[in-house]
Length: 499
Image 1: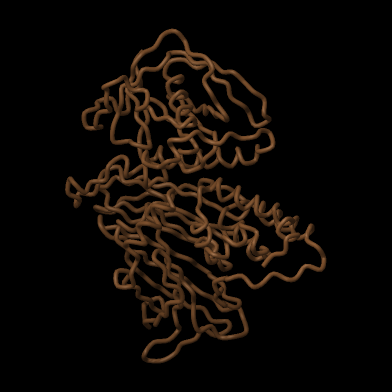
Image 2 (image 1 turned 90 degrees about the vertical axis):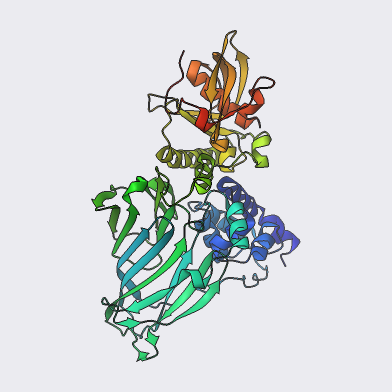
């Protein structure tokens, strides 16, 4: 138990931890899973009842992609701690596998989709650079159907956990699959598995001795109702080459993009292009990188622009389901119905930058899934972040409008009605009256207040996002008795507003 003085001194770390968890829109449970700690221990640290360790701070920084901010906060906390303070009790840390001096010469990953089931095939060429034989190798299997909504994913896997029977995990030793490998479960959770692949089978043992190298291969399957539209490789061992492939049915018209994250950087697009090839009725996306840094994560994401032919009409994915799968909060979430918390600028400028970066990342995902002829906007509460920030992409330009603590202070005299859609309930469109000119007061990162005048279509886009920041949806603007219409009845998709 932390003493009263220690609890006061660790406020700097606890405050930073809470802020980053809020920026990422993650619950304590989601953070605990990502860190590999128990939820109870994370809660004790955040409530000040346990003192965070160096290892805890590093794990939290990695899980929240805080770019070193949490490690710096921990060092500051330690510098303030009384010299005679007792050492912290050991954390409830999940055991790390011991791999000695194992080196991965080639990490090759392939994901095959048949319209219903994903099959992952993972190949590693392992080199033992150590002094002792290696007899086992740790693998991880993690799924997340709704990566932008941890509570929704947690509910899904709580009701329908990932099972060993459906995974059908198999592993082999040798490039020709010459020896099957036994495996033993280390951790068995609803959406996360850790497994030791053993260099042994019923016929004998085949350790990887110092100086030797070998290919191992393993595969498993997951149904698409439990697998989100992403496939990720995390660099946990020194690695020379990473290659990734997605093998999709061509008739689904897949669109694929890649994101790279590390301990010190936000998500960034791959530096090199993803190769796209057609092979009969399949479409293959391939990407490689050499000498990846430790702890880097390479993530392929995709969207099927045509629904799977095998789905019947009632099972077809609705536009709102697509948006939910891309991390957009839907209209039943209370966060959309209350005003967002304003930033205190310039004191919270770094927080504002991080939120805007998250908005840009989410907007890229959404833009891959849908064409926006009228332009597009996205507010922070639509991706689960309760802060007063939004971005707007006007049509026909690469300009981006950033709105921090924005409010409309004056409306023009003339109004018109145009159909609007919202990513948070994308199955309908509504004919919304709005002014043709609005005057908006907002702030920049330095805290300076500005007044900007927007007109016509851009004014409509900006007003829509400012409504979000104040807890309103466009349906709140519909005239009495008017209702939004289903997307099937709306004929203006991809077409700009007419003035």
